[in-house]
Amino acid sequence: MKLGLRFFLSWIFSAIVMFTLFYVWHGLFLNDFKRIQFPLAWFVAFAALTYLIFGMFIYFLYESEIMKKIRNFFVRGVVCGAIAGFTLFMIATIVNISLTKHLSIQHLMIDCIWQISEQIIGGTVVVLFKIVIHEPQAEHA
Image 1 (cartoon, rainbow, N blue to C red):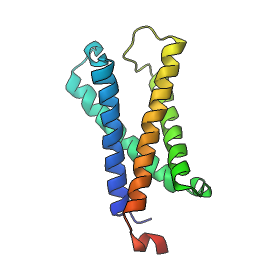
Image 2: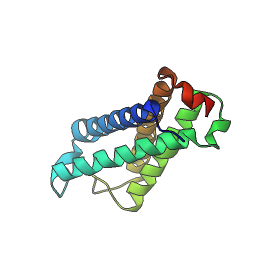
Image 3: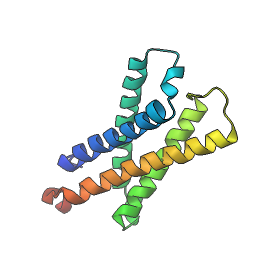
């Protein structure tokens, strides 16, 4: 598999969009960053790295053979985003990465829905870049 412009732009822009949504939600809307127990710069750097990894994960999941069975590009992007969002939610929950001290079922459900929504938007960005950027050599491979 040759990684071209589609891959790099889809990956980077989906990661940027997801990270921006994360930052707006937790940093501005919920103001959760005040509760962080270690340097904010480290937290933001690790979060950015996480979103780069998940942007790449969404792209490769989108391109996987099992996902290619879903013919509709947008539905495939939404499914990949939902899988990535639920995966990220589960990882964060299992390793207890939370910015809230008291986790209720309501908090977990809202967090799960938000995480899935955030990654669905990232999956949609991947789809948009794949549609907009035409790479003829990728079509013949």
